[in-house]
Length: 176
Image 1 (cartoon, rainbow, N blue to C red):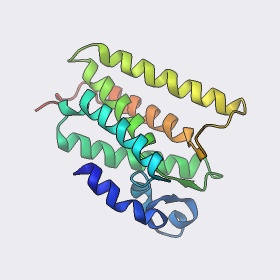
Image 2 (cartoon, rainbow, N blue to C red; image 1 turned 90 degrees about the vertical axis):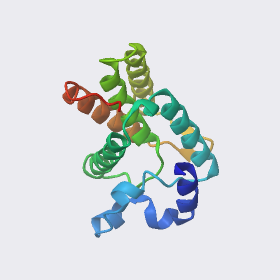
Image 3 (spheres, rainbow, N blue to C red; image 1 turned 135 degrees about the horizontal axis):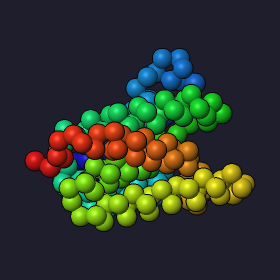
């Protein structure tokens, strides 16, 4: 259902993507909806494959309520940080920043009670994000085909996911 729902809203990219100027004029839904629309079919497919891998690796162990709350909070944090810290960034779309946040968050939360492989997942995602960030600062363009990758969203998502995971680490179990 999730994939079908996402596929249906792709035709509304212009209305839903994170657009800095539109958000500043009051179209606040873009803070959340921008994470669910994609630049093109290849971008959509890449994010869906990543989401499915993450789902089967992590999220089958997560309560739906925790997942939905996490998506809502992390989408807002990522978009608001992009808005405040990166004023030259005019647009953003796609699940990747949100997926980075979810992996970091649930890796930290699940590492306390489950297989320690989740610590490895946290290390891998941080290494990936640090390499991306360093490459961009060295002047390399981060693209998939002709599509620019907004690596800032990956860094922001990973940061907030990690911080929230550690902050909430002592709270109740994630599994039903």
